[in-house]
Every structure is written in structure tokens, then in C-alpha cells.
Image (cartoon, rainbow, N blue to C red; front, side):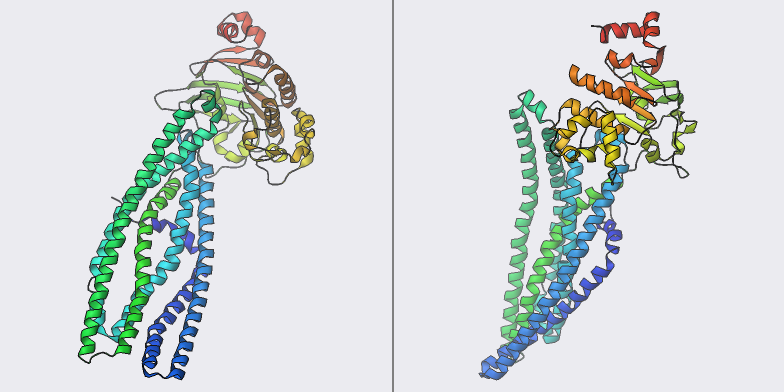
Length: 575
């Protein structure tokens, strides 16, 4: 059973900002001290107002105004420094979690909900920042006033103070009970909001499919159901708050009425003067606002705890792949690749590759063919070390890839995927993706290899042309040629072509194919393809079936064998 609050996880992030917090807390301390002077000064004003002594009234009004001025100055200081500290905490937290997410493997993102991750990194971290600011600023200031003002009130009149605090234990218990209920309801509400964000991300990302299948009304119904679930979850939490505030307010009113009764009785007995009672009431008035703030912020504190839990749940996810403790950068390679009895399955009881042996020499072009699920993409995933094999080893230039850093391994492998993903930014930034400083000469060379230089220069801003979301303002062939330029920019010794021309028309395919042939020169190349024009140029074609290599050879050699490849060729390639 969970006993430790999730808020403890925020302490390391807050500690980094201790100089700002110290400045803010000093201002809070002086703010509370100055506040304690107000009841006395107000009492003095009422004392001299009753006597008609205008000079004394003016004197005490001036002092009271000065007290309010200093109070406002200290309030400004605490607000400014606490907000600065909080924003830095939010920045550090968001950056830390985003950095952690970048370390998680492909297996995590295969099941993760993009909308949920986006919601946690944006809305929920902002909510955490808001409550951190209120806790370190308003809540602390209010809590100090709730402690200091009653002490001062005891000094003024202990009987009245006891009368005013008679219902305090009941109020404290109610605030705690309401807070725990709100925590439970807020967890449900945040979960429903994450579901709604996930749905929106899916639909907007696949809007072409939605419209192609005329499924707009279906999606409206799905959205309406999720929105209704979200509304109900929020309504239940708001209903608790709606009940809490009148109950607490009624108890406060009862306490004040009882206070007036006791005060009137003491004045009638000669134990209390009118000005002293006014000073005491000023203290009570100053106490009401902090109590209201603490009550409302305790509710927010409990509600936001659900967001804190969800944010730090991300940090609890361990990466499935990490660099070994003694991992070293992969030195420049020639491109020799060896798979030594490699077995792998995405699920332990369903193997995809079984004792696979594969030796590829530098500069060799290897084509992988086979039916869906045969293991083609899995070979590539293992080479890129998106996953580690359950058995066997993979070597590049005789070096086990588990013994080198993942970053250095992937820097020497270029990938041209079937579906090119471009990011918001310029064409140059997309070609040099992952590089902070742009070498435009190198970018242009890569674009020329990829047959992209000419169409890029047709844009008014050429390499500075802004690419829309996912490259929507470019054709499929243009996007693919940018992907080739991106892959060859770092001059990798190993190049992976993952069905790079399968979705193109014949004209675009010709330009892309020409670019690929230039990109493949003097590199070790792995090709996953469904088109004959790409496959038959390979030095060796590997036919995979149920995780094993069942045939290997050149295009002509395999056709002469009249085996699996011939059957595959007849069904898939022959026109």
C-alpha cells in the first residue's frame, strides 16, 4: 500500500533552485511579520476615532498605510522569486522526463499512447508547476499566518481565541477527508483526459484514412463518448468541491457568530474595551483569507498529486536497452556484418529468427525477401540494436555491437525507410537531422547524390524552405529523396533500404532508384524490397521463411534453382 506522497519526488528538482527559494522565504517571513502589525494599528485608529483626536487618527492612518506599503513590497518579492524558481523546476522536470523518454526502446513506443505522453509532458507538468508555486508561495505564507496570527490573538485575549478556534479540529478533519476524496476522483479525471488526448492524436494523424472511409460521423461519436466520460469525471470532482466550500464556510460563520457573543459578553462585564475588540476582529479578518487559501490549495494539492504520480510514472519505466558499463564508441568501420546463431522473438514463446547465421562482406549488397513475418525487418531491427537477440551475437568488423555505445553504432548506419517522416523545419534541417550546426556544402553534396538538389533549388528559399508537418507540401518522391540525402549525409558504411520505392509511381521511382544506386556505392547495403528492379541488383538475395534463410544467391542463380525464390518471384514480381 502506498504511503509516501509523490510530491517527495519533486524535492531534488526544487533543491537546485534553493537560492531563489531562500529569497522568497525571507520575503514571506517579513510579509507575515508586517501583517501582524495591522491589527494593532487598526485598533489604535478606532481608539482615536472615538475621541475625535484627528492628529492621532491621521498619525495612525499614515503608519497603517506605511505598513500596507511594506507588506505589498514583500508580497511582490516573494511572488517574483517563487515564480522564477517554479518555472525553472518545471523546465528541469520536463527536460529530464523528455530525455528519459528518448532512452526508451522501440518496444515501449510500440504500445505507448502518443496523446497520453504529450498530455503528461505538457498539461500535467504545467499543473505540477502551478501547485509547486502555490505550495512554496501562497500556501507557505498562509500557513505561517495561520500559526502567527492566532498566537498574537492569544496575546490579545485568550478567551476570545479559544472561542474562535472551537470548530477548528472539525474543519481540519473535513478538509483532509475532502482532499483524499478529490485525489481519487482526480486520478480518474486525469486518466480520462489522457484518453481524450490520445484519441485526438490518432484521428488528426490519420485524417486521410478517416475521410477516405467516410468515417467522420463514427469519429464524432467516439469523440463524444470520450468527452462525456471526461465531463462526468470532472463533474464528480467539482461536486465534491461544491459541497465542501459551503460546509467549511458555514462552520466559519458559526465560529464568528460565537466570537461576537463571547466578545459582547466580555465587554458587558468590563473585561474588554471596544477598541481592543476592533483590533481583535481585525486579526480575525486577516486570518480568514489564509484559511480559505489553505483549504482551496489543499484540495488542489490532492488533485494535482494524481498528475505528479502520472508524470513520475514515466521515470519509473526502465529502458530495455542500455549501453554496457564498459561500452566504447564504435571506431570507423569497413562494413563487415556477422550474425552468429542469432535467435529472437518479440514474445518469448513466438520466435521470429531461429539460429540465424549471416556473413556480409564490406561493400556487399544484400536483399532480404520473404513473406510478411518472415523476419526481414527483424534482422534490420537487431542490426540497429532496437532490440537484443535472446541468443547469439551480432558483429560489425568483428566487434560485438553490445560492446559499443548505441549512439556510435547508429551514427555509422544510414536508413532510408519506406514511409519518410519529415519534421517541422527547413529542408536543410531535415537533411541534417540530429545535427545542431549545419554544413550547407555537405548538405548540398548529399542532396545531389539523392537527386534532390534540383527540385530543392526550384523553391524560392531553396534549402531554407520550410517543410510542413510530416512534409505535407512535398510529393512522395521528393520526401523519399530527402530521406536518402539524410541517410548519406554522414557517409555511413552500412546503408539500410527498407522498401524505399514501394509506394512511388514509376517516374518518381526512376529518380529515387538512380539516387539509391549512387548512395549504395562503396557501402554495405541491406535491402528490404517488394520490387524486382531493386532486388535483382543485389549481390546476394536471401529468402527468409519462418525465421530461417532457406535460399541464398544472385537473382539468376535463384531462378535457375526453381525453388522458393522462383515461386516468390512468380507471385510477387513477375508481370
